[in-house]
Image 1: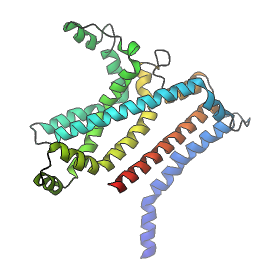
Image 2: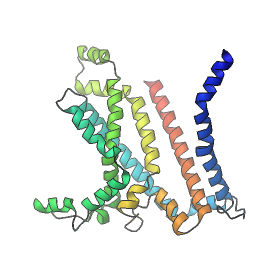
Image 3: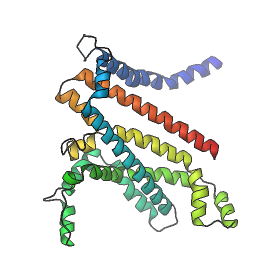
Length: 285
């Protein structure tokens, strides 16, 4: 019986056991080999030369700084807006299910469609946004030229805030009603209940949102590539876009592999730091 149960368990685990080595560890090993040997087919061993070059490359450092700003902006704004929407749509409001679905639609839409849509909306000549500003007597803006990074952050928040809202809604609905009733009986007002009850109990949800938000932002490529092409200049050339340019414009696949491995290390470090902060916050609470 135990053998049969063990065999059944391994049978169900087989897809995962096969998936992770093939789709996770094998690509990492391939990237490491390319970084150490200077390319996919180049047999010349360069060691850590590509890594040290990346750590001193001004273009790479510039793109990494922009990516951190992009990640911080989308994370902070997304969490605030997502939580606010969740608090509002968690109330017994008419049509709240419809509003939840409408807000979630951008997240379910292809990022390519979102990029093309907003590129047309923000076009300084034919874009509908400048036409609306002109209709109310306000001057039009060259959004993608004068406010490129802020515009990309805004589009990213618009596209992902629905998912953040759904996560916070799940967290809010997981808070036992007895806690809220007890706080209300003790005389705690809405603000005190929010600060001292809702926020601490939402800490696991906030931690999860922050981790996936940082990882997603650090890996973002398609949105700035479609909307701005990384420009003007290198104003929106995020780290993944820099890797793409190095690999496919400059044909330096070994160097691009080294850049990819550095991004993997940064994501792992930030994830561990966020988890440690979350554990300390949870233990302190």
